[in-house]
Each structure stands twice: as structure tokens, then as C-alpha cells.
Length: 126
Image (cartoon, rainbow, N blue to C red; front, side, top):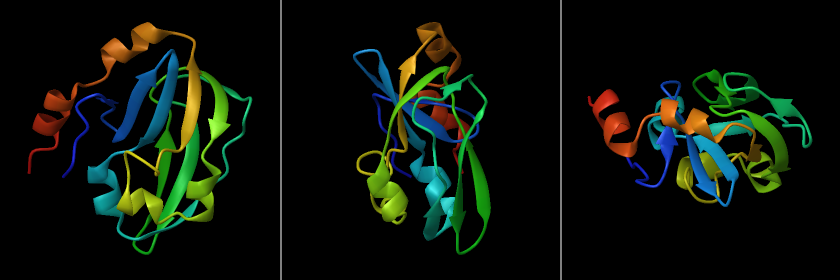
């Protein structure tokens, strides 16, 4: 299981990496491994305003379907259309090319409620 030290993690296995007030959101390497080969990533609406815990999108694999929730509140600024066109990017590069959305943070303090990389590794220790 790969873990990015500069990301924060939700117990529902989403990650957030902040760059200049904008949060990149994706699914963790642990989650993509459990899903198996991802074959579909649902649409995300640019411009929508979400609260932490809201449904961001759904992901389907050869094994199962899973909902992806936003771990932070804010406005969706950009969607990674490359990952919707090539869902396998979630498997091959969950923290890089496999990001799902960029969200303008409306409450940066919510990041404090997410797990650090160390805490997430402990949480997902197998």
C-alpha cells in the first residue's frame, strides 16, 4: 500500500492534497487495490458546491461499485477528465494522474479532522 506523506486521509479511503488553497481529491491506493481493476468513474459537476461527506462520484470495478465522498467542503473547480476517459489511472497512479477533482476549500480547518499519512497507515495496517 502506497501512502503520500503530503496528503490527508478520510476513513472512507479518500485522500486530499492541498496546493495553494485548492484541494486535489482522489481515492487511496488501499481503496483502489480493494476495488480491483477500475472500469468506470462517474461524472462530477464543475461548479457544484459540496459539503464534507457529500457524494463526489461513484467508481466501478470488475469486482464492485463504490461511492466516493468528498472529505472537504468547497466548490468543484476542475474535474480530471483524463481519469473519466481512462479509469485505469486510479489503479496505476492513484496519487498522480488518478486524482478526481480540484476543490476550492471553503473551510480549511476541516483538514484537521482528517488523518495524517502516519495515522492512515496505522488505520489500514493489515
